[in-house]
Amino acid sequence: MGVEDTSEVPAKGQWPVDPQEDVEISKDRIWIDGCFDFSHHGHAGAMLQARRLGKELLVGIHSDEAIMDNKGPTVMTLKERVSAVDACRWSTLPVPYAPYVTSLPWISHYGCYYVVHGDDITSDSSGEDCYRYVKAAARFAIVKRTPGISTTDLVGRMLLCTRTHFIKSLPSVLSGEEGPGSAEERKNLGDDLRQRMQDYASDETGLKPGSEVWTWAASATAREDHSAEEKGSFHQLVLGKPPRPDQRLVYVDGGFDLFSSGHIEFLRQVFKAEDEKGQRSGWYNEAVRKRRIDEHGEDYSPAYVVAGVHDDEVINHWKGVNYPIMNIYERGLCVLQCRYIHAVVFSAPFMPTKSYLTTLPYGRPSAVYHGPTSFMPLTYDPYSAPKDMGIYKEVGQHDFQNVNAGEIVQRILKSREMYEERQRVKGVKGIGEEAVRKREEMEREADQLEMIRTGEPH
Image 1 (cartoon, rainbow, N blue to C red):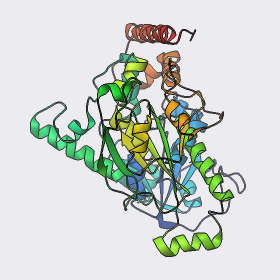
Image 2: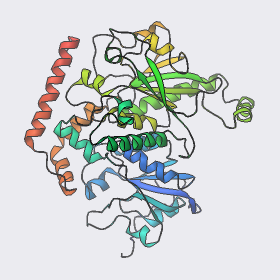
Image 3: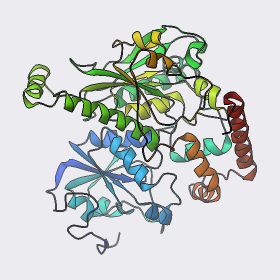
Image 4: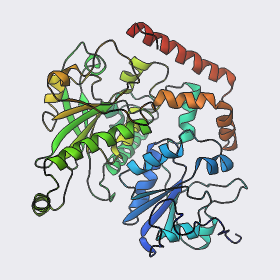
């Protein structure tokens, strides 16, 4: 195993995040670390399992430079990756610049006894186990890797332009009616997906009910266009915590593809705006807060945020190519794990009409928020109904507003050769120039279609 090099252990005052003083080590304080490139639900699943092993979860995030030296280029910057980890409801504290080879002095400084990692092998640039020191100290625990999702899978979808990940009907998949394999295999898969959805709907402890999950059923026209207005019907998939007394009901929606820092910052800004409104109205007055705790056993935020997630076919109708890169189930789990969300509605309409908004399971929302930019230019205003209802709100400009699925795909294409090498090291067959040219051509065709729809240069 060798002796761990402690020369890069920060001095007091130099640790990337507080506390600067050593913390007493506790088995209830868990450490997990990684690249956390892309905010996919596999990363959230690892954090959920780790959080269930203790009462606090500290998440070490490697620097861009360390990842380049040991693995290859990242898709997302360190700042973007920290934002994603911080937004996960099971994360207690993100710790940037964590060493690529997990360090006993680092985890001990932050008071963590156990280090958790998935059941796959992670090696450094020399081919040695990144967890060799914590394993030797018997301070290592293994959790199951989430099947069917990884950064490598997602990069492959982008470069190969595949659509096999699309889901036509989420309820049909969950019931075992849609999908590959035999009837028994589809049923088992549906059961597994339902269980994972329920797990991701847990609260910040990962052990109790948290978010609620619904699906909305209506015609394809009502889901993807503005020419039909239907009430549709809501069906509950997961029972969690409904809105509490005096909470404002807030609605947001989107594709949330590749759940990026742009989506996360938008949701954080919504949460912040409602929190500031609560502060101005006396929500955090000590007597008011005490009454909530006495009556309900816990305190809660001034707003209950419901996120509508669009179907795969809806996004593909507007964006083309093979968008969304993540299917509706994968995107929904990404939204569900976010600490700024209280409920998710799968298959939400692209245009939230008055009929839809007034028949939400919790009643008419007090506000409908939209971000500063759109990934899908349109010839009509999809938010005309909330504007007419006087409940439309906008989140202002922010640092990550241009980070969306299209931007991420472009990053991959521009650095394709480096990502190819990263895939090759992992044993993944090379994509090839022809596949990349095909992707670029399809993106150009999609841009031309947008220009025709909007009548404006893209």
